[in-house]
Image (cartoon, rainbow, N blue to C red; front, side, top):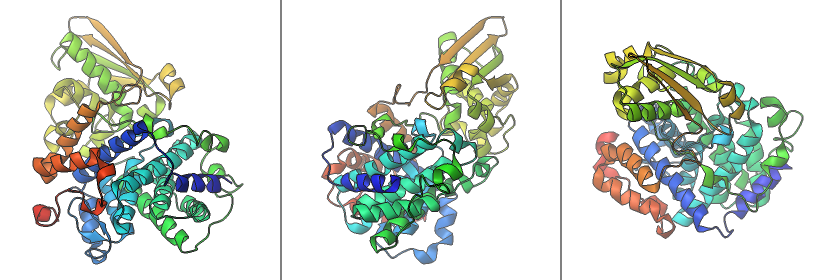
Length: 455
C-alpha cells in the first residue's frame, strides 16, 4: 500500500504543475548539493573510490563531478553521493534527522544526464526524491535514529523515488522500485562513532542502490508487497510505532522541500545551535579565549551522544566534537573550513577553551527534538560576569534560513577553490535558472582539461 501510493506520487511529480516557491526551494537544494559534491570530490573517500572503480569509468552516460569523467549511472551516483556527504556541508530535513541531498541529487543527476534530460526534469526528479524520502524519514523517527544512519537508509528510498521520476517509470514500476529499495536500505551509526570513511559511503551506497532499484524495475523486476508496513517490513524492523498514514498525508498540497535546512557550519548539525549561541555571546559581549572562565552547554541528547568527544584527534573527529566546534566558534568567530583543518586541530587557544567547556542534556531541548534543534550556552568570565544565550533553532533551519545571498556565499567558499571562480560563477548561474538548461549533461562544472589535475 505505502510503496504503491508513494511510487504513484513520485511519477506524478514528473508532470504536476509546481509553484514558483517549490521550484525555487529545489534550486536552493541543487545549489547547495552541487557545492557539497564539488568540494567533497577532491577528498577521500571520493578520490579513493574513483581510483578503485577506474575500470567502470570513461564510458556510460553519467558524469563524475566535477571532472566530467563518464560513468554508468550507478557508478556516478555512488562516487558523487559519497563526495557530497564527505565534508559535512550537505542539507538537512530536520524532522527526519536526514540529509537528502547526497543520495537524491547524486542519483537523479546521473540518471538525468544519462537520459539527456533538461533542467526542468531534473528539478522534478529532485522534488520527487526529497518529498518521498522526507516523508518516510519523518514517519520512521525518532526510534529509527537510535541505531540507523538515516542518510544511508532513507536516502536509498529517496534515490529510488527520484530516479523513478527521472527514468520515466510507470506508477506500478515505481512501486516495485521503492519496495526493492527498502530492502537494500542499511547504514549503521557505528560508522561515525570514530574516524572512518564509512559515513559518506552510506550516502553513496544509498544513491547507487536507489538508482539500481529504479533501473531494474523499469525492466520488470518486481518487489514484495508490504515492504514498508508489513509485519517484517521496514517500520517494524527498523523503528517503532510508525504512523504510515502520516507519510502519505497531504501529498497533494504540502512540499517538505520548502522546509529544508542549509548548513551554516561545516561540521555535524547537532553542534550548530550551540555554535550559534557561542558566536552570538562573543559578538555581544566581546568574549575571547582570554576572558572566558567557563562555558556550559545544554542541548538535546543526540547532540551530547553523537558529539560528546572531548578530545578529538583527527579533523573528522573534530567535526563531531561539541566542545571543539563551540571553542572554534569563540576563537575564530565561525566554524567553517578554516576551523576544521590539521593546522587548527591542536590550536592552543581552541584546546584551552575546550578544557573549560562542560555540556549535558537539557530537558527542554530534548523534549523539542527532532522538530527543533536548540541549545543554551552559559558563559562565566574571569571577572565574574555571567552571560547566557538560548538558540531555539539553528541558523540555516527553515525558521531561520540562510538567505539566497548567504547560500551563494557558502557555495563560493566551497566551490571556488576546486574549479575556480569563473567556472563557479557560470555553474551558479545555471543552477539558479535550471529550468532553462536544455541538457544537464552540459552543466558547467569544469570538465576535461580544466580539472585534469583533480583526477
